[in-house]
Image 1 (cartoon, rainbow, N blue to C red):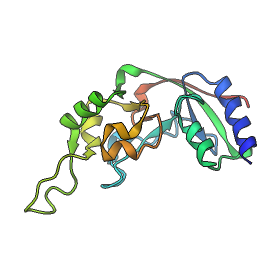
Image 2 (cartoon, rainbow, N blue to C red; image 1 turned 90 degrees about the horizontal axis):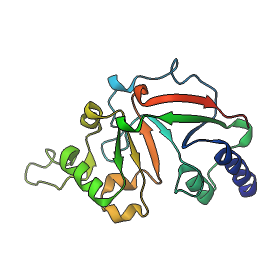
Image 3 (spheres, helix red, strand yellow; image 1 turned 30 degrees about the horizontal axis):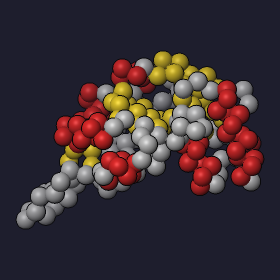
Image 4 (cartoon, rainbow, N blue to C red; image 1 turned 120 degrees about the horizontal axis):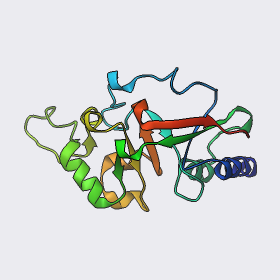
Length: 178
């Protein structure tokens, strides 16, 4: 099966622009969009990944497709649609270096354990995504080694990706003909 997926992802990577969203059904991004502005962006207090539309870069960039190939993650070519997406990068919080992570934690960091245990105070290991959403429409994370960042929230992302929670950040989208 791995060869089939590799060939499928290579085809997607060759046809896409900078970012792609992989999905198992066709939908209209603008008409069917869940408005993440009105939702709690924090999926889980301890996992700390924001809700939104996750998009991937090309194969060979540490992307979601690279992760899928490395993990033999199921994405059947029969049931996989690829949406080529152009984004407005000025509306995204960019995390590319350990300094970017440090700055993000200083501005938006918190620790969900603070307040639970009145006798202790913990270093920020999570991000308050609702506060980030006041300033940005999404986040883009690119890094060489996720563990260099030494923050619990970065390790939940698994790979280089972007997460869009406000459709204003999407300039254009189209389904790729596979």
